[in-house]
Image (cartoon, rainbow, N blue to C red; front, side, top):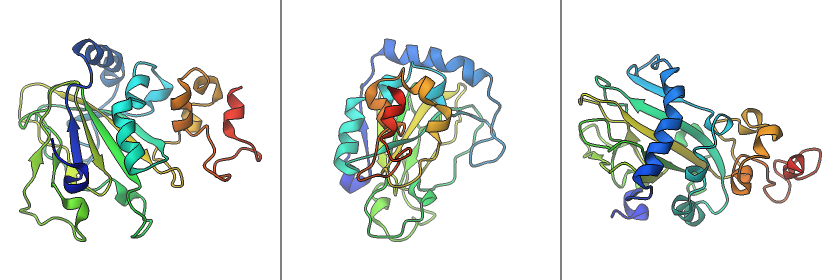
Amino acid sequence: MTDLAHDGYVILDGVLSSSEVESVRDAMRPFLDATPFGANSFVGRRTRRVFGLPATTRALDGLLIHPAVLAVLDEVLGRYLLSTTVAVEIHPGETAQTLHTDASAWPVGEGVGQIVVNAIWALDDFTASNGATSVVPGSHLADEPPAADAARVATTMAAGSVLVYVGTLWHGGGANASSAPRLGLIVGYTVPWVRPQENFTLTCPPAIARHVPPRLQRLLGYELYPPFVGHVAGEDPARLLD
């Protein structure tokens, strides 16, 4: 197992059972089938991406608040919100994604520590040939982007495993040179004082949010960040779910 502080990522093997994986895959299938391929090379011209998942299915709730992942978040971020959930299906013929960092979306400056931790759940086996996410180990500690010839590592893992990495790690989706699609679920989390990528309080208004687990309600934004960030008319937004 890699070390998160040293390498910038860690793989937690065998977190989900085969039946749990199959249940999530089945829930995702209708949404994936209705989604077109991406329009550019970064999102993938042979890749399908489905967003807004907490508003459309309860099949993912357990993954979004899985204790194995939240334990890492507790250690790295302390307090956090859900930032994005996206099912990503990389199809044969897709090329490798450009290396990037996820934290670059928030130009908060230096010296604030990590503001993003993401988890990628493998819903198929991730292999070197079917598009497993590639990472540059240790690149989260560097002041400059990795060199073009920097060593990349394919995060190979069995379905049911999860890759957890910090937002400053350089990484990218791999090319799919196999004969079958590769499905993963990206779940992103940010510290609660930056704006999440997805506006979950709009996609999951109180009528939807009151039916999700309490821990997930808070991650969706129905919680104050002390002393009063995120309030609604001066009150805790959780009051909207009463």
